[in-house]
Image (tube, rainbow, N blue to C red; front, side, top):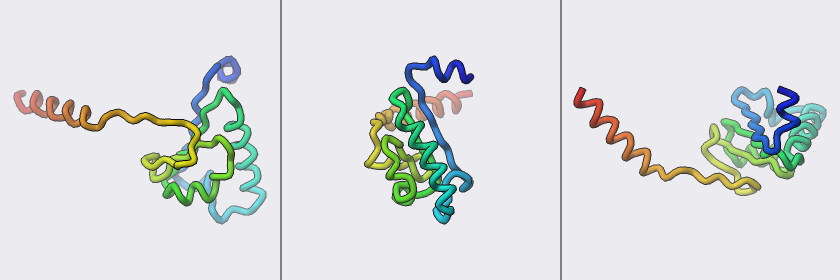
Length: 111
């Protein structure tokens, strides 16, 4: 795995926090400094697209880690993206999913 990491030309790094282990708004400075160092290092690597995904509201996530350059943030369980993000995410047209779901329901109802 380590060898693959170093050989890769592009890497998507997802740091997912859903239980408060990574994000501790009341954390002591030492903990916050260590997290800042790790996240800054990951985000600074031009081969990486680094994301912090958390259940917290995006504005709170920005207040904790918004200062880490090139770190993309997604709050509210990944549903709300920070306007500070460097990466652009193009989401699919939701109406296509609705059409597919309708067709699926029609097929299932005939069984």
